[in-house]
Length: 183
Image 1 (cartoon, rainbow, N blue to C red):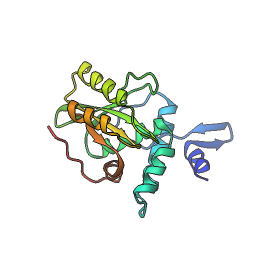
Image 2: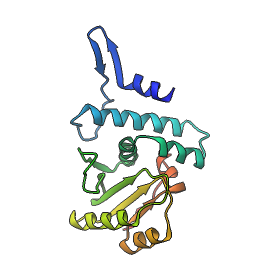
Image 3: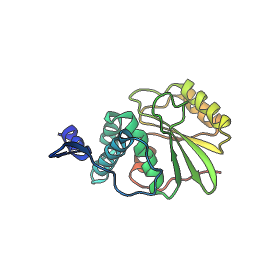
Image 4: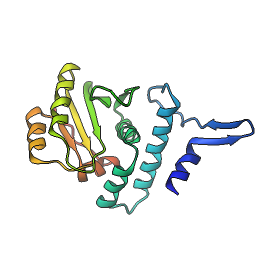
């Protein structure tokens, strides 16, 4: 049923065939492909589902873990945009060099790495993201994931000064609650 609703949001049957629905007007960066538009629409559908009320932590994480990984990235960027942060998309989902988006907060550039995990995060991903932050000369970064964080990954995040959004903090962020940005 969810897949059918997503399909109905993305395409429209016309006399000439199938036409892609356009996303609502937005101040976000203009997108270059219908694929990006589809992922944004899927992200908006999941946001609507999570924000409809009554969704608690375990179910919210289950929903986030089940969604398309690219739509998960778009969901996070949408949440950043809703906070008034300037966002910049990557126009490539795979082979993106470990960078899923850029946000500017109070004039400072932060990078986003989104991982839609079911299990534990890989500490190597944290280390690689730290390298990208330095290469891009960003002020900082947010490692956002839907899985579990083991102690070595937590140590690396603290050592590198990378913000972590997972578990309850991820769900709170998606639901629109405030996020403290240090720095």
